[in-house]
Length: 373
Ligand SMILES: NC(=O)c1ccc[n+]([C@@H]2O[C@H](COP(=O)([O-])OP(=O)(O)OC[C@H]3O[C@@H](n4cnc5c(N)ncnc54)[C@H](OP(=O)(O)O)[C@@H]3O)[C@@H](O)[C@H]2O)c1
Image (cartoon, rainbow, N blue to C red; front, top):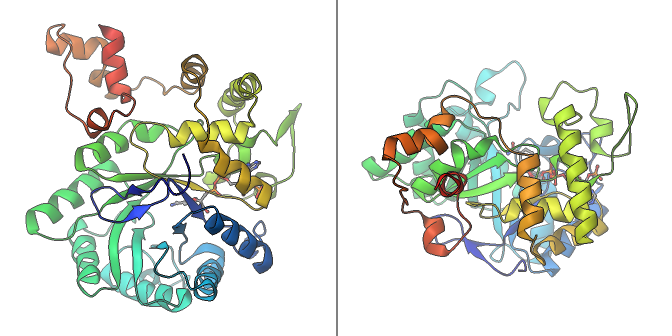
């Protein structure tokens, strides 16, 4: 599979590459990104390999990421070749609660800033970056619907939101004849599989695209970090962010180290770098549309693009699945296995799903039902 094996973004007509280029590392303002020259080299390499899907956000590197992405697109005259995604939600003016969040006032402020920094008059895919816990879903849907009608955005999606909020937004839009969201963006990797509980099934129900972020757990799954007693050795983003309060960067846990151990062993047996195996696993999981990759070096990007070129054999894939399996929790234990069998009277039920129609691998609940037979 290559970057030109385009796939539709959920139930939309937008065709995107199966690997999207994340640009959170464009700019050095956060202390671990790239200068303009190196960001440009990453951008050029991704485009030269056939990629057409770019992800940024208004808050990345204090707006610098958007400026660089906009500049590179303009200089390369690629605006109509790329699918450009950016995000709103994070606060741009500490002390002013209306310069952040998902209310109409902030969305109107944020879109104008993003269009200016990106040097464009439309965004292909506009993301709500994270749930703000307060804005009614009606306000979010009607504001984003209006932006579509005005031509400022073509599609919208939700990142880092509860699945119930997604379901309410989709259903409301559908019932009111408004533009529905078409995609979800969520953290997903061998060390973070929680979206399998509610978000993947919700996406399959509504035909939404799913875009995993941090598929390498910020570089942890590349195997570049090692434990020496209580000390972690290895250079990179996680070393630089280890004292930050941001929970996204807390990857050095006992559970994650044990998953990494299995990944390293599987990679050795496959003769592939761990980063490629970890990315391949994410990109080929049920329900995944396009995986957002991050790279600060050309060699990393090349490695990541090559992650689509092989298949992980079933026995090795099972080892990865088992090592990273989700803890059985209430109420999810009711939705598969013994308890579903008690509901169906022991008769296996096959649900219709897009996965079934496209011949994609079975969903986790389908696998559990099959195991129960
Ligand atoms: N919606 C959200 O809330 C959200 C949150 C986070 C990210 N995102 C999006 O997702 C994108 C990707 O996230 P991410 O950068 O965290 O992804 P990631 O793939 O988990 O981490 C990327 C980092 O891993 C290391 N790496 C990448 N490829 C490698 C390779 N082949 N070998 C060894 N190390 C490798 C590099 O670390 P070093 O730079 O340390 O070398 C690189 O910067 C972001 O750019 C952004 O667009 C969205």
